Length: 76
Image 1: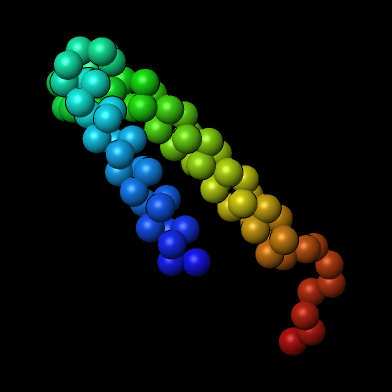
Image 2: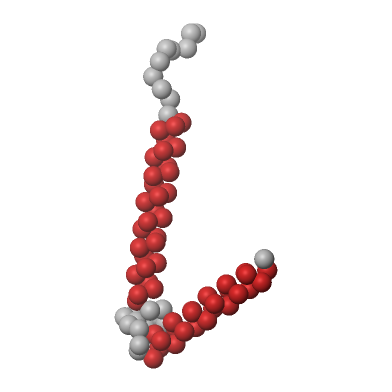
């Protein structure tokens, strides 16, 4: 199990380093010159929008489940 985690982290690190080098060399576009390729930034924005939509959906579902249903009033 630890071996899989180490291999996965190593592959991700190599991909990150390769992307940064490619952005610095000009092989990948980097409009804001922050060292992160625009392709990756665009994908992260898409993922962020998707996650926000799912969070909103969960909040709406929670409101529907926990809302007080109309019915008889409690006796005093």
